[in-house]
Image (cartoon, rainbow, N blue to C red):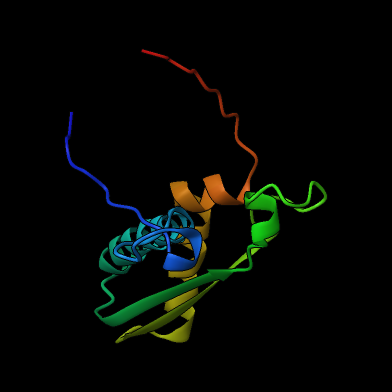
Length: 125
């Protein structure tokens, strides 16, 4: 068991203090960090030295759905897009193979890109 706190906040426009990532930014960073682990691991297995890897993730979120202002608007994303900028001693073909391995094996990429069963429980104390 691991115990640590993950801090989340909202921008001031949503009554937050703008002191930490919001939940959507945490979702996107979780996606990117999971893929980063896969990139580093696969590059290492292939003997490819990495100089830098940057993953940018973005998406458009219509706050009318989150705020319940319009029932026709989803409260979440329709799509996310990521860009991987990678530099190292690998060939373009090796980097493509690394990316394909990440697509095939990243748990968070899988969870974000496929419907998964989600159950819940409410405990009122």
